[in-house]
Image (cartoon, rainbow, N blue to C red; front, side, top):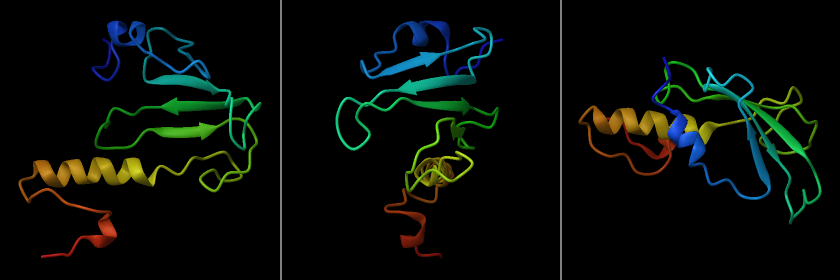
Length: 115
């Protein structure tokens, strides 16, 4: 069975920028894919960067695993290619908190005041 995260109609309707290509090597596994990004402006212009995505069964409560397969210096990518996705982790946590009925948090988790 296909995941509700990306169903075939969603894939066909993706409107990616001309600088990006997506590859689902296994059309039956939409939770694992690769993204090629070729920036046409800025510091990384002319580069080709490949990212692999693994979306777990716990999504959206658990963030996807993203790895940069291209060696690149970037403050959010470590030496093994792991991409820091703190903003996604915060977004999924904030979503869970808001749906739990404790109100809608504002700002990053550090700004929340416990009660």
